[in-house]
Image (cartoon, rainbow, N blue to C red; front, side):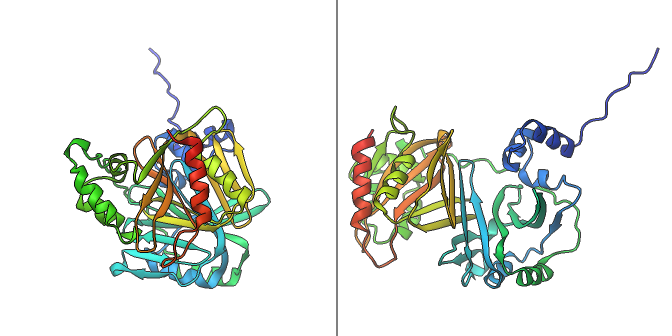
Length: 358
């Protein structure tokens, strides 16, 4: 009897290549999801072009000031946020657990989630593209920093010389943690929640207020009442999403906005106007010099206008949540702490509510 001959099992890199042959424009995050692995596992399946960084990520980020313009990218499953600018005075606090940069690059970094970092070199058509990529302990991509034509190459190479590590074996990744369950609405003291919400003096105290009331953000928004929250229709026959509408309004009226997008390791912020707004299939995009936004609104289930009191007056946001109850994008009117919210933004939000109030 002849022995059975079996085909050798395909490697992860081969499976990835097969996917790319079928879908040449497939992003690595989506390929990883299709292959049932983390983005970091997929990245490390490459034979070359990936070198580890020393795990001194706060110091590395502080050194970014010297390299000039870079493109930074932060995303979650629904939204991609890209800013091209120069870091200014990135500082580390909280005994190394947090980092902050303000200015044209505006980020809030939670360094305790940053476990692994790599220099990634890729062939992008006729050019070689270099980026610094940072991942969580379970392989989730948290943040990427790309060298651009305007980057100071000499300073970039000095930074790499200081922070590249020796070759290391692939890290042992931890399992993805179970998602925190949402609060049971029936257990929440709604009267106390409304009292504490009404007593807010600073929008930065909002998370502490939620913790005090033992409630997650989305449940609190659903419970606090129409004095503070307006639920919007996610879509209408004429309007694909509230995000489409507010971006078009902001473009038409030249309203300056702030766009926040984050994941467990970082929140990235853009402040300014928008101009080139385009819908492409499920994605609404901003394609401006210095700022790109790509939001798959099919994956954003719930939209709310949320108001919070503060010593600067009422602060108004538009917030989008995915099917897991996670906030994936937030928009505010552009303002600095200590200043009231612009009446321009308030007017655009009121127009949005009149159009899409659920």
